[in-house]
Length: 449
Ligand code: ADP
Image (cartoon, rainbow, N blue to C red; front, top):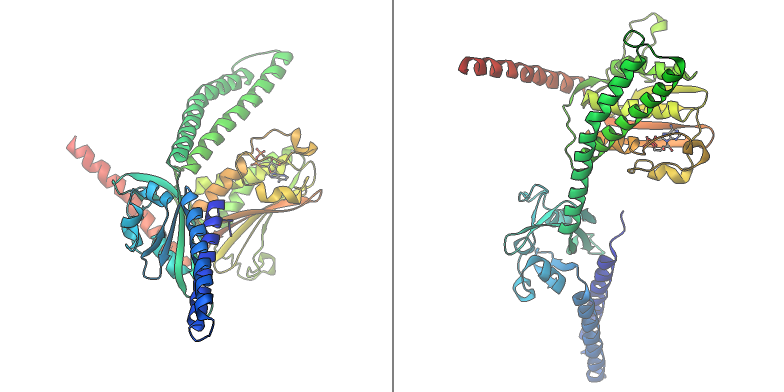
């Protein structure tokens, strides 16, 4: 579970204190009626209640984030000044109104949520803390602003039922606009720079081609170095472009049904040359326990491990993981493995290389993260490859992670949801129908012209 922001923690603590004190005082007040010292006890308790209420109200008004207490009927019971500043509703107006009237949430595209998808409704049904960093808030003057919203349920100890919820939110429009501008700049700059770099790379390749030009050994040496650096630069721009797109959800994807068995087998044939060039062995293990071995002479039944993903994007993931394995393995072996159960197809790329320190493993898939040690310092890289891999795998509801033993090697696993043969057939049928459509369109377009 992610930690709550400080403001949320303070607000929750203040509300919890106020609730507990209120409840205990009410209980005590009730009991007190039947006791002899009722009058003096009442006075003390009421003073203490007033004190606590004052304290929590001071804390709540000092918080600039919006803090809203919602009761089980989804009505607003507490609404601080921060909430008022952000939403445009005054405290008096908002109190006792239905929360969805005051906190009108919209999805990242600015469209209103359906009831089931609305976080303000989900918190009561799911009863789990929600961190929402993509919703928009429609203010009283109908302006859409980007917010970060944390919702925490308050539950009845005995029944576990959600009896109230606390919403803490913050206006992050400025921050999101800055991020967008940064991403736009990176993506435009890398797009523009890719073109001349590709041209330079092309001309260098021509200069190095014996059939086209003749150069002496020294010139060849220099041009070879220039060519490899240009290739590196081209890859960097491509990675920057892909990661900028991945971040704002513009990564193109055309998923189709892929049989991972034959797909990986084919791809490993293409990949293994890079490893062999470095003197590394490669192997491909189709490691399902339910596979009947071909050597047994019986009918060979290779189970079909279907996934629904974009084949080019998956190639990007596997190539990235394999290239890393080659890059960070001075000697030994690289294994590409595939296995599955009913719901998940898993493939992995295992190497016998340098390995990764345990403390770096949780950060590997972050943007620009590189392990900083003598083994990696001399090896070039951008720290974008694994970030892109994660973004692609997540597009298909999958998961990628690493396991490693320092000095022993690393294994990178990818899990993707498995689809059944029936589902695969159905999707393939739809794919073939869709593939026919453009022909019809182009035919009619031709006729109109
Ligand atoms: P880079 O361009 O630096 O390789 P990646 O995002 O692909 O960027 O990888 C991030 C970091 O993870 C690398 O800098 C390297 O330190 C570490 N790493 C990735 N794959 C391996 C591997 N197979 N063995 C050891 N370290 C690895």
